[in-house]
Image 1: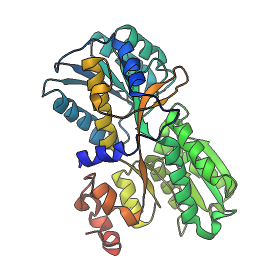
Image 2 (image 1 turned 60 degrees about the vertical axis):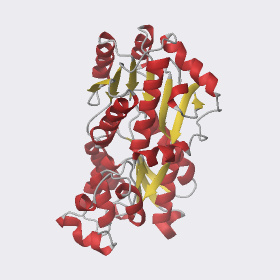
Image 3 (image 1 turned 90 degrees about the vertical axis):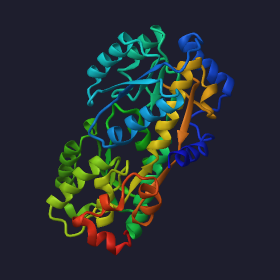
Length: 370
């Protein structure tokens, strides 16, 4: 499954957020971070993840990265892992901890992409290259991998228009975007607007603090109060966690039929909501592909000071503070009832038994999921 996931990632290397750069340029960029010092397999990789409310980080990212580091270093590489639990100040302290531990390379998924810039510089000054993971942090980043975030927003917007049917022209929706501290949220939002603007009326739009479902729930209650429960034809939700809070608010308003709600991350609860018809779609992103890619990047940079050893084709991306950062962009898919078997089940995210619990057995039977 994971070899297949990397094959999927490889098909997307031509997709870039900026102009393409050569492999030589990518290698030079990475080499600048640690002076080009070559090391053996006995390396230590630091991993800083942003939060533990989203299921993906503990279920996929951390264990896959750890497994891949072992494979790429003949079992000699070590992982130092910390989770910031959505606290930018804590993450800044964790960078200091990784510097003190003298890790050879740091994989960073930033809580606040701007606030972390000083920490990234401190790491570089200490001779520790930083690979930005999933979110493009500011500061002197050596490499970056993520999904095509604008494409995520476009995928969500297109799915919502499809679900709206006749109401796709002139219908009224609510937009529930992610946190302003997450650069990906702005890209999801941009992508969604590029599809939705001019087609539907956006009755209310929110940037949801910290991506928290409870904040999305409160925002949705406000939108229902302001617009009227029967005047909302659909809801753009930037991720699955918020979709859960939104759907709770819609059900609490006493709607006989829920409007279509989007999502992202293919969380188990969201997949079950999709099967039952409470949530229209999610965005399937191959976390194994992303995690294996960042492990290859980090190990290659730690061992050789270059990306050449990672065996990856790279494009380049610019952050708010740096240009020409070598990057690998992984593709995404719209997840609906129709392709659950070909996505989350085929890639071993969940088993049919995990999805089709007693509560959802009838819904699973109805769509032929057995």
